[in-house]
Image 1: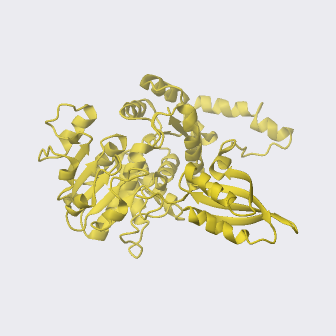
Image 2: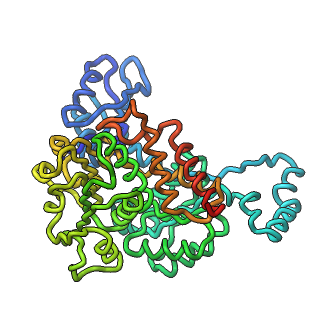
Image 3: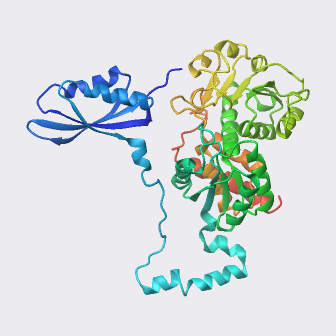
Length: 466
């Protein structure tokens, strides 16, 4: 599958050339000849004899970006002065900052914000710890915690390299739900140390977002923290993905006229995301599911089952199918992949039931080429931004945490996650719903509030014991 130019590999090239020459008209053509895409062309400085122009281009990767620079430099009369990588420029000095919410213009204000006035507030919280949610940033703060062991698709790259991703996550919390999120990158991959560290810092936060921690350790970290803490613990790689998949699947099933409890689902991937998707789908009513990993279908007769795979085997695949993924896909209504690229072909998709649904979510290369899948399936979704129906966690985690924080919830339950998925699905109206629009844009104006309201209502009922 050919990779298209992307803004994530965006460069700005500063060029100098003759003011009266014909080279200006050749710049866009030079970029396009090597497969790049010009997104902006700005005159930086002009004179009677020479002119400086900034050409901004999208490339496929770093090697392709260099090829674009070389092509521009080869245009007659052009001198390349400077090349700037726009993504790296955005990250210089980090992407987030802390600002005071209150003015500190004089001694009176300083005396209330800090000593001696602040002591009165501290004493009030000491007398009633629940007041910390009312009188400190706790009520609107989330810790984004990682150990750097499973960052995006980059693998175990460590806590320092994970920081740009955690900063980005914090920026998304603020942009889409006005939540103050704080990146916490831990220099340990020991389960006990991670759990103890998060337990120790928890008093300053209203929620914990676990991020990019590899399986199977992430399961134990989350489970233990949920037992220890009185604030919600949410592993976005698992549960954020699961919520978006459930929402998208609900709408995809509406498109093809099928019901969740009646379809056969074939899944590829039994890691953190796959297991969470499976559990939430089953909580929402899915009944007929076969999960496959690198060794084939998960079934009770396999001898390599760890506790997670054992749970999957005992709760899915009732017929005990013991073949490979291709066999599991044949006759299925839905395929959901969170595994590896190119594990299926168009011929495999053709063996599925009529009006099939494909969620090929491996990134950047899906389990099956989306263009090929479209030839045989009625609805296709990926994790990519250059195809319709992008399954993206940012659609839900801001709204989920907004609802949890507003409700002062002490945990996050499967019922809350199903409510979030239903709210997300309902953002797409009947008039909008179609094969290429089963999930709303992340920039939909009412998205985060709609999800937050549903989560808040369920959390409120749970707090009352309803």
